[in-house]
Picture (tube, one colour):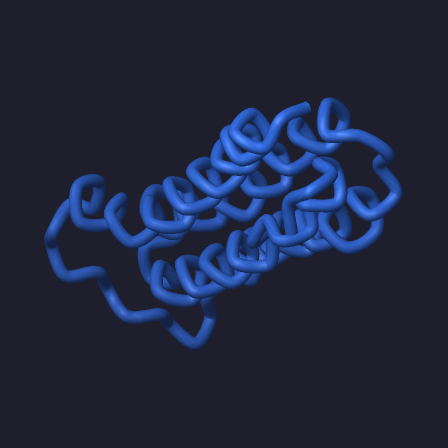
Length: 128
């Protein structure tokens, strides 16, 4: 594989990551109702913590499953699924739990950030 082809394949990983990472800052501006959300009540249900569960599953994919993959063809779908799971916490905050929107967006941002594709260089010789 020549250098330009390798760089193009690495660019796919970086563009996907950057697009999805930046999206979680844009979605709330376009998808939120814009009305002030009611403050959390002391008796609030803890179901909103399901968003943390999604980020935790994405962390398992990133730190336990992706390092075991042997090639880019197997790793790229896992990369996308892991980021999508972390990003879904943002959508839970926007649509289902608006009182906890900020917390869920922060968790989503951290979940996606951990997928920064430095690790993908090992799949392509000559690129780091």
